Image (cartoon, rainbow, N blue to C red):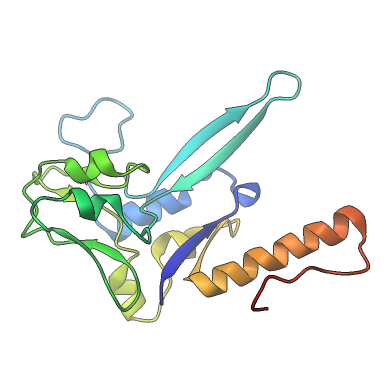
Length: 184
């Protein structure tokens, strides 16, 4: 079983509730001697993407965190073996006791998920393991007022994506038939 996030940018209102909930749940402080406006370590963060030119310009807000990759580059780059992938659910976790703070994982991660903490160690999203163990959703998912962030197994997420794609197909052309993937 592999757990995953599903993010729908069309539902994101840029309210930052996910980022704030993550910081609160994980007791993430602002950086010491931080620049004005700095928010310190951000295991989940809102990224703004702009496309097009006026009058057809568009802004997208993307809520980013650790992607808990299938084959994580951060694990391969860590010389101390401080990052691992849990076999039971695919969550990528770090062991603060093993971390030497070399930042190799941060450089290797294409999503910028591992961040250098004030304790001299790297830190990152752990999918709110403490909440999952209580049967609750990750803090960012529970706090998302627009329903833009969802969470589940890769199979559940795949079903949602397929259902949405089928609805778009139906709305776009009003077909008389639907295509199924192999194995459906």
